[in-house]
Length: 478
Ligand code: ATR
Image (tube, rainbow, N blue to C red; front, side):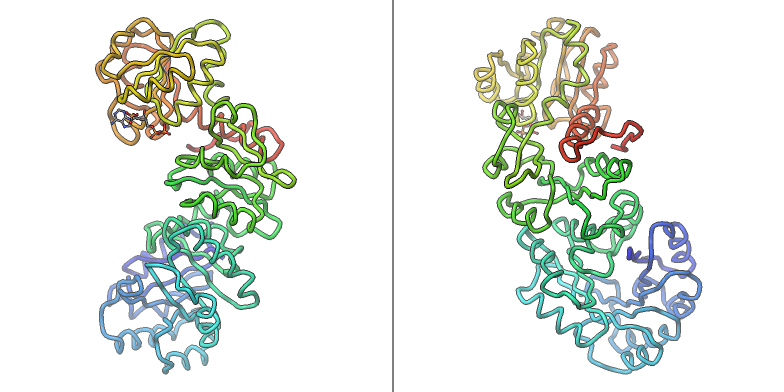
């Protein structure tokens, strides 16, 4: 079940929220602690106004809720609300057995016994779930993984605690895979909301339309992307709709990864079929691969890993993903020379690709030593950003590979005088129109955008993952 956490202040607004999200959800949680005092009195009416099971919850501040009053009053408000036809009531582990338990039993309302931890996962998490289950119908643990090792602990719950009705939630950025692959933790539901009511929660639409979380079963092939940070990545929007279009039972999930080594344990545990690799793991991942393509060997970095019999194989689709949008211009001789702005990990693959196509390259970088090293290795020239104007009218292509312009309206070469004849290419895709491209457009240059490269490299990854071409009818929202 996908369960929506209602955080509105009135019953009327909660009903509107359910209506707005109804197509994506199977249950909802009415949070008394978010309702104003007048509306708390009307809570018992709520379950009969919606056509999905409702969980009743009154969360204290210390457990991540809004309630700050006395325990006596909280109990009284919960008891009054239990006149309604709720499917479940959530009672925290430290709440002593009282008339609430009895009333819930009499009314046939199941008790979820819950434990919250916003700092970590306690060592005795499995014992905790068993204890909670003894005091309720369903055990719920909402805990905070701080590493990939912790994420492994949560996915292990499925086998360690099989046969126990439970809700397992991994909060925060590390927990996102446990929210999407909730059925692989053995959890009976996953929570969602529009406004984040707990760290790391996803929207109902995303869980349902992008990840199809409810349809994930033991036969679903799991793919993903590893990085740090990673949650901003648009790659799930590229792969998930395409899996669906070719009727491939698979899901693509973002994994925040602190240790590549530990991630490989998780990949084995989830029987993952492949994954994308992004900053900062593109080089470290090489140590764990049993086979690599020629491009990976030459460039020294890998962005695509696929399971092969007995080993993991790495390839690099950044190389062709970058070249694809400008291939015609190179073939037809319109690109013979290029300025590459930046000398980081991303520019390495780009420089290699351009040099392989016989394009003369000058690397401009804030730190000249890095540009010089790359230039030496790839038979290019190097210069500083301040000297950019020396190359005015002398290059056919300018590629922007630095992080300058990512989410902000600045250019790494603000005073560069474009002639209008240059082809300008920014690999940043958020925003699509960077300051660098705006300046180039003003002078009439032909532009290429970061989402083109992202999509092109993603299409090739899709082929590596599935063996099928990327479906033509899918235009991902990047
Ligand atoms: P990536 O792997 O994404 O390329 P990186 O290896 O950290 O990331 O490289 C970042 C690039 O952006 C580098 O070329 C960096 O220049 P330095 O080598 O001088 O650090 C460049 N860069 C980052 N911030 C910059 C800034 N404020 N001004 C100019 N260049 C910047």
